[in-house]
Length: 299
Image (cartoon, rainbow, N blue to C red; front, side, top):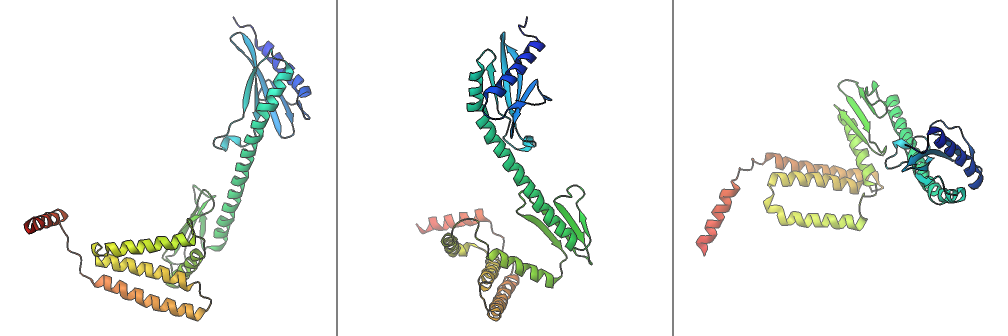
């Protein structure tokens, strides 16, 4: 048979709540207990108290409530301690000040930081979505994700869609049936922007060293790569590298001249790749066996 009924446990929680207001540092006062038996608060923190019985002993559970919205933050939970109700109030107040309040301050800071980041993300997302809706022809918010996805259609066969990443740092932008002059401008603007962006990983020296290593590896493996594929990949890389370099030139005429010559060379390389006959299918197993037999006959 329990030693404490509900009224006893309620009385314990209320008595300790009143006593803690006197023994905790700061302007603590009783608060309206909506979710628990008793509650005390000061600016920036609220403690919930309730009593329960365990093995015939009355115990007090004390939980520090976190800012609203904490449940949406991963890895965060309101800190809580439990103490025997027969301990001196001074000892319980010391436990709260030493264990519970520092944990609450740390967790509350994490919640506020996460909520601030989320508000910033929403503001950035709304800004770029609104800009799309104001600028693009025939814009329509996405039916299922109107806050971060939009699309547009027209004029003619042109259409576009955009979906923002969860971190509000990137977006997937899909354009279809783009007029060639507009496509050229988009490619030029994108290439120029990316060429002026700091590499995601590594210093400038590391990036150049990686490029040198890749070229060395290509030279070693060149005879094992089909000629058509080698030409196509070379044309693509030549185009990219020439654009990166030319965009750094201050003289517009010189930049246009380099890009024009590079385009001519890229076109010639691609044309050569297209005109090559298809590579014959090879039986790697048969070739290996033939090479083995040939090698054995030479011994």
